[in-house]
Structures are given as structure tokens and as C-alpha cells.
Image 1 (tube, rainbow, N blue to C red):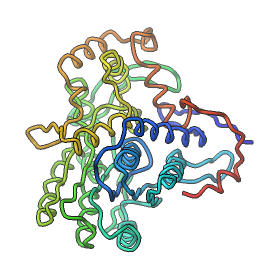
Image 2 (image 1 turned 120 degrees about the vertical axis):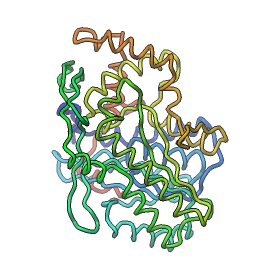
Image 3 (image 1 turned 90 degrees about the vertical axis):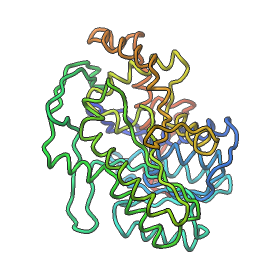
Length: 398
């Protein structure tokens, strides 16, 4: 029987618990069901559907709005007892199994979303097996590497500052260590490469391909998740390489709006709140901000996990008639995070955190660590340990 080990390298998870991953999907489905049904999109494509924002979006739309969904993600299945695959592989399986119990279509494409071949396979499926049209396209892809579909050149993103280095405190969850880190500044090439990987180019390519294939319904909506943060993290996020990539998404949204104008479509940038994801955990300094922010927001009753946040976005804001936009027409569900009182209290707490107290009750370190662990199937609520063999895992179909 397999033993599942919660192994980390810094803030990167190395081990997974497939049973726990699948249980967490069920937990998130139950959360949405308890909130009740809502009217929303019925035919949905989600690019980047296997974890965090993308998975939570898929769960909310399927089990809240009754949507049939297509999910595209790049995940790996089990190979050996030491290589059980990725958490997203099991998330996809659990989602499909639960959705099909409800009579919903839940098609998983596990492949490189950046390639033209993947786009064409999805288009063929929409035409032949999905009713011919989709009314919502969610772009939630998080990758550090992208292969240009035209040139074959491989680009790598960088999490770096722009202009000058940034020095500040961060946390290593493997070593349970609080320390000072220096974030080096990016070269012009590194900035450009980060935009190439994490900007809006592939989002626009998806929308162009779908539009040309005539599989977008009249009035189609496409969303892309961004993050802006506040003065507490601008130096290493909003004004850094990650911020440059997000700014590119704003530009591409304008292009997509022009593209969709003749079918009354809309491209919507959604500025999401700070949540625990595999991607956010490796952003320098961000864990310290989170353990302060989460503590303050939890005390106010406004802290959210990805499923809570995404369900609010679609249930209340996009399809519930209560949107909040900024002057650039971006949807702002981060309104709870950027509230002046919340930020003032978060700033005050950040300034008190040090190596001696960062794991104390004064902060939300335990909350951050649990939420991070859940992403890999550990510390999951309602988890029941089971004897599982490698052969049983290999027999699961995505």
C-alpha cells in the first residue's frame, strides 16, 4: 500500500496525497451546493482548470449554475510509487466523476494549452460533442514556461523586481523559517519573457481561434484573473515582472473586446484577492503579507479560500447583478482586501511580525500552512485514510 508524504522544498510541494486531493474537490463541491443554485453560464471552457482559481471557478459554475464544462490543463498521472503524478491530475478526475453524477458534461483535456493543436482539439470537441457554442471562456492558466506556437522558442518567466532590488522578510514553510530575502531586479529580456509567458497573448490566441471557428455564442463573456494588491506588495508584485504581465492582460482585453464586438461579446479582467495557491506561495515576501492579511480578514469574517472567492465572483458579481468596477472597467472582487481599514490593520501587523512570533496566534501562519497543504491533499477536512495501490491510481481515468 502507498504511503503519502507531505514533502516540501522551500514553498514548493513535492509530495501529494491523491485521496486527499479528491476529497478536497468533494468538499468544495459541497460548499457550493450549500450556497444553493444560481443562474449563470451553461456551456463553459476553462483554460487552466485543474487547481486553485480555475478549479474553483469550474466547481462553482457546474454545481452552482449547472454548467457543462471543458477543462484544459497540463497535468501528469502516476508513474511509480515515488512519482504519483500531480495534484491537478486527481482534481480533474474527482471533478469529472462528481459532475457526471449530476448529469453534467465534464470533459478534461490534459495537454499543452499554449499549442495550436490543443486549441483545435477543443474546438472540434465543442463542434461535435458540446452543442456547438460556448457562452463563457475562463482563462486561468498559471505556468512558468511557455513554448511559442509559431517559433517553437521556449520562454521562462521570472519573479523579479523592476528597476532595483527589493529587500524584505519572507517565510520558508519547509524549514518553518522567517528570514530576510533580496529580490533581484530583472533585465529587459526577463521582463519581456515574463510577459510572453504570463501575459495575455495566449488568452487572445484562444479567443481568436474560437471566434474564427464560430463556436462562441452571441453575448459570450471571457474572463481573465489578475491581481493588483496594495502599497504593501507593489514593490515585488504590481511594480515588478508579475505586474508587467498583468498589465499586458489589460491590453489584450481591449483587443479581445474589439474582436468580439460583432457578437456582443465581452472580455473582463477580474482583479482577484490574495489567496493561497501553489503560485502565490513562491512569490517572495508574499507569505508574510498573507499571514497578516488573513489574520485581519478572518477576524472581520471576510477571509476567503479560492472556492469561496470564485463562487462569490460568479454567483454575486458576474451573474448576480452586483458587480463592482474600477475606472478601467476591471471587476474588483478584491474589494474586501483593499478596504482601507483592512490594509491599515494588515500594515500594522506586518510591522510587528518577526522570526520569534511569525508562527504565533498573533498571525494566521497556521491558516496559510493548512491552505497550502490542502492544495496537495494534506490536512484536508473530512479526509478518511484509505489503503490505495499504485495500480488503483493508474486505473483512474481523467
